[in-house]
Image 1 (cartoon, rainbow, N blue to C red):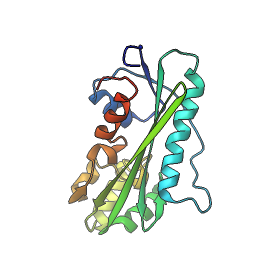
Image 2 (cartoon, rainbow, N blue to C red):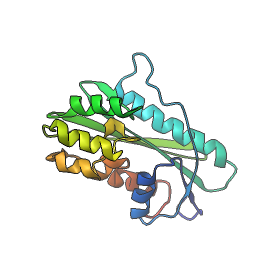
Image 3 (cartoon, one colour):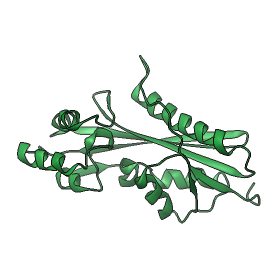
Image 4 (cartoon, one colour):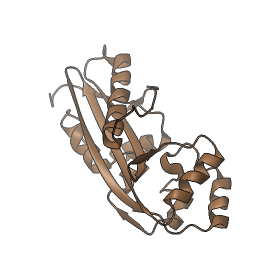
Amino acid sequence: MANESRTLFLASQSPRRQELLRQLGLSFEVLDATIEERQLPGESALDYVRRVARDKAAAGWMQVAHIPGAVVLGSDTEVVLDGVVFGKPVDREDASRMLVLLSGRTHEVHTAVAVKSAGRSSDVLHTSKVRIADWPEAAMSSYLDSGESMGKAGAYAIQGRAAAWIPSLDGSHSGVMGLPLFETAQLLREYGLDC
């Protein structure tokens, strides 16, 4: 396998995942592998994040299965507090609701990475614990006004202005951003990619 030429495809339009994957020194092509992201009744947060990552990789694979040596990476990141998944906010009010609930508490961020190639698939899950300080209403409102919370799981970006309200992180900074680089690199090496 190591001698076979590999072409990596990222089944994600996320600029953050693309930036993180470039940090590993990898060349890749981006696929639009849009899938429905909805937690099923009775599905745990961990099962949900893993399933979505696998579904993204599978949807990407359908587009490139005809390419010899194709390897597809899909990923999903979810913020979870008290077993409840905080997805991407639908509007400012939803983002505010999420941040109020997260303020002054420690929550989990689960990121699953799934890789698929011809006849093979595997995945890994990384969990980080993030503490958000008590976020005063005026400061939170200013953050919401910035628009940074939109399109982000849990309505915040650890690599952005929200970092000013995150006193501690137990886990992977890149994982909270959307792609745990250590685990991702380990997984891709198993598929013959050098990183």
